[in-house]
Image (cartoon, rainbow over all chains, first blue to last red):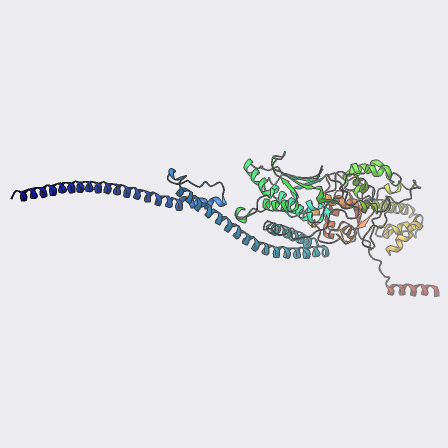
Length: 520
Length: 120
């Protein structure tokens, strides 16, 4: 009986112990569970926060950062805002979001270029057609100008021609901005012709004063003629547009060390520092042109200048203000784009201002060609006010000009006839009408020299002289009337007829016979 | 003298007169003869007028001849010449009328009259 309770007690004790042990374990595990629950709750809360932050970040990206980044492609001054949470800046998420913006910008830029290129191609095609049509119209108008000289019709034709030139300039500019060729091949031409031609393409060209200080014969190589005309036209257009209508725009053509400068000065408002910097950037032509950047309506002038300066190796400077208060634009044409055209064989256009340098240039030909100069030297010097007497004198000016000329046509002048001779120059084998020269009397006869200096008689003077003769004969006849009875029949109609009638009655019979003959 | 060696002229004609095509004098014609008056040209003469005056230095020219030499239309030269005439720098004479044929009828009557006189 004793064993049994012991056994029982032992069993109970074991059971109790194990119950305690189990209870302890249970308690511990329960505590652990509670702790984990709390941790899970905390983590969940944190996760919720993070998700909210992430969502807010993405919303911020979509609402603010992406549009700003897209705008930044077109307008670099637009700032893209940073992420909402500043701690995100260096984190992987921040970097990933940055990547999103970068990719977007790259793709947008590519699309933009593609779309612009398509627009430019379309515009190029359209303007090319328009340009060709306007050139045909120009031909027709000039043909009509040659054929008809009725003043009213001529006035209309002049106006139409001017309108046409302006339209042509617009079409040409648009084509050039879109990367097209200038659209017209020209011969080597006088630089002053290119400048004057550019001037003619503008409304208000009458306000432009061109001063030509170049050697006569300074010309542009053929492929530079039209670009220079376009650039000058655009610079002048800016100058005319931004200055008061009662001010002049002054153009000076001057030779510089390595070429020629065309300076355009206006007396307008001028540009601010920023505008000037932007204009200088445009005309430098270093950045590709996008139509979408030119504004609406697109301002193409400076962009076209930029294209041309890049293509033709010209340079335009807008960085300095003009002493007249406005803008000074300087187009520099380097000497590799210059050549010489003999001004005697191919004179510049009649409307192009003659060089102011002829006074200096008239001196050397007088020194070596004194024998042929029938008029006194001061007369030639006073010719300074009348253009290009020196430039039209045949060869000596051009040979002297070669000394500091651009030296591409040397052999051309070497084959030219001797100075002082109006020999037939190369005219493609066709007979050429030569101008009659006043200086043709033989050099060994100085006596006839004063003769050409006699002033031509004005019509009024001739009329006065003949009238005096007529009234003299009439008076004489009146005096003679009492003596002879036969004369009055003649003297009655004498005032009505030409003086040849009276003269045949008078002493001048032989001298005036032929006049009476032709008058009948 | 047919203008440029080829291609179109750079400088349009209206520039020579500043866009004016109505001459200040109506009596000028294509064949009017222009002569320089020998007066010294003022320094402020427009380029095209100066060019015309310079052509006339070498002798008298008709308006069409001057137009051909200056490569301008006649209408422009008429304006230039009229302006120069107004400034007494150029003289103009009316064109010489073409010689007219004698009226054969008149000649016959004169011959008849002479014969009549002779026989009288």
